[in-house]
Length: 252
Image (cartoon, rainbow, N blue to C red; front, side):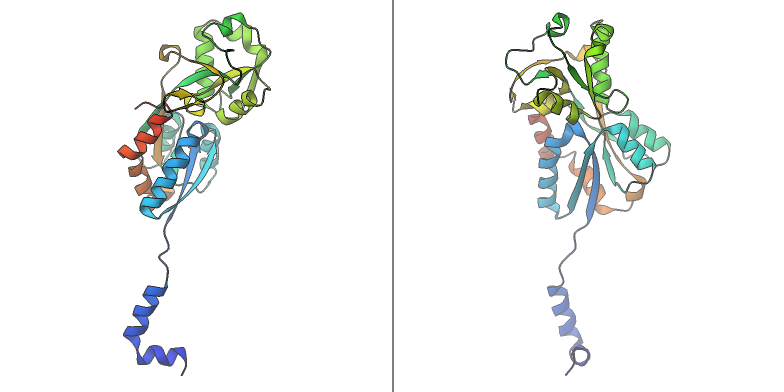
């Protein structure tokens, strides 16, 4: 007896068996994430996957570069930016869903060195270093914040020749951690965990030295009917997700 004959003879039993044997295919959400948010995002994504069974595909990079990729048709569903400018611009240009944008975290800037006892509030004025790392001010909001700080301290011109620029804040961190730069500007989340500096020495830059780094999330137009993307956006607002962010020094 063939399978088709069997299905005809026992249609209800066949359908029940098929439904039990066929796995439920969870939806996927593709998320473009600003580099500063790499560590907390990996934890949040894993928690979200466990709770919802959806799959999160993460890409990390500079907010400005993600903007260009999205405008060129990159298949992202959600953008977690390092500022509030790019998400708003995407809304205005019709590339993101109007009304979906919200601030998921407020970032903080730190001057950091992999060397112990190297950084203090006066190290920039002393200038006893060869290289100062920062993210590209044109592509990365944390790089723009670093320029704000140096401008506030009247040190932009004196130190400009010592700049080593990364495309994003992760590259700036790599320059410092590898020793290619003695110190540099990075996100607090990259060097801080549970209230403690993980290594090296650091100066947490006073908030008044740079414009607030309001980091916005936005749902992209291509994902307007995608349940997994909408669920992910909602999950970012939960106490559990906020608790993860707080351990890395983010504010709300």
